[in-house]
Amino acid sequence: GAVVSQHPSRVICKSGTSVKIECRSLDFQATTMFWYRQFPKQSLMLMATSNEGSKATYEQGVEKDKFLINHASLTLSTLTVTSAHPEDSSFYICSARDGGRALNIQYFGAGTRLTVL
Amino acid sequence: DAKTTQPTSMDCAEGRAANLPCNHSTISGNEYVYWYRQIHSQGPQYIIHGLKNNETNEMASLIITEDRKSSTLILPHATLRDTAVYYCIVSMGTGNQFYFGTGTSLTVIP
Image (cartoon, rainbow over the protein chains, first blue to last red):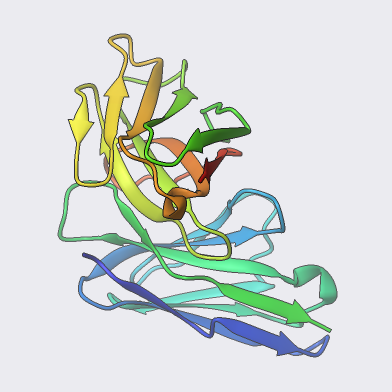
């Protein structure tokens, strides 16, 4: 099956620093990747849609200058949380859609738990 | 916004069938129904999807009503490892976004 690797799985950082999270599709080419955020006991909230080679499309209310997304290749997308603050602490999850298939199945990474002190 | 409503929680006895309902009364003709589950602190796992016909795979069966306004995910023989939050999502079949609802927290009881 399609595998999406997300790294790191956990990160703790100081307030004001930036954190980069990587999302890789291991055995397929992902023309589209998605980034979600999940707070405790809540559902996943879509943050942005990332298409290879173009600018990401952000959902309403998501600050594009704070959450920088780069999708430079068909197998890698990165999310950088800039100048992180404690309120950015959350579970960040990426997903990837297999560009070689017509169906809209998204395959998810294992998530990154970010804690900002 | 999510276009689905699901019960908040359900229990199921181990070994019995778990039937998880989902209401999607505003689904459009070209939207699919997708089911995923999320085990605590992990990424969601794809289970099954369908357009209008019932579907079955090695994990589950999906029953979609004729008017497509609701569906039921069936886990035929629930095990303790099936304890998870189950999400029903409707989305078009051409790369559109997923908007997750609140899902159903299924607890399989020994």
